[in-house]
Image (cartoon, rainbow, N blue to C red; front, side):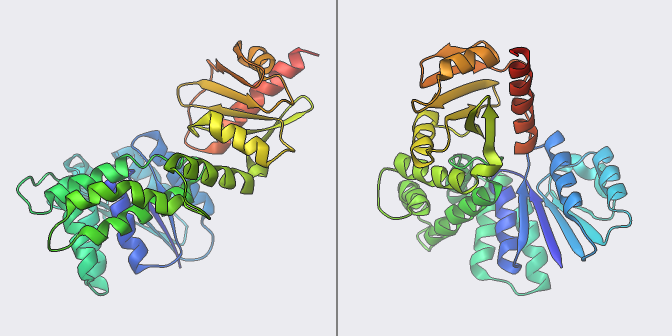
Length: 338
């Protein structure tokens, strides 16, 4: 049996997935904000379905009536069942119309998920504590003893932006699980939320540390460069006779771009595009990226470091959709130059 778990991108969203990950093996996790991204993520799940029995669990995402009807229709004839656990009162209409839509505004999605699986299988005391902490902050129980710990965990997840979930969704999920697993070490009798707050830097470093210790910034850069190198064929693009790599919202472009090009000398340039339509170009002496930036988007800068704005770029929720736009831009501009 296959299990797909689509959830929100905050503490409650990842918290619900922590619960599922405890009770089941080989779950395929994905995360979404509200709006069109939910539809795209659900469509990705549906496209992955085959004849094997599957369960689709959606947590901490408030759907519209149109989305519920669409999701139900797309699963007709599929060997799959859908369940949704949510606590947003705005989902009341959907909950009354669709039997698979479970709504309980008195508990956060993490606690709903925990209580459901704990009743079905066996309750785990540490997991129950975790769900109570998430619940305290997510539904804002200021007088609850777990509230301050919940606030620290809330910030822990919200500020965990080191791995881009569009490019590396699996690794981003593993990172969030790592942070919350180590946060649980402070869920003691002392309720040591101050201790957790002080150790966040070290907890992050532990995830990114591969061989030797370094600054967090250098460890992150090395980790991301390794991921890019392992998946370089997927991210590869071409500009005339030059070969490059395209990233999305990768962050720290100068360091990561240079480190990647040094580690992968068969590549000539590095481009990062952001949700704000900006493009950063980097090279290592093999191509003039100031000329490339000018040609493609009217930008410019230096031979090895330039930038510009892709005015017609439409932000997306899948890397493939983002890459397609850049490849089409390159093809159009290079054809015009012939």
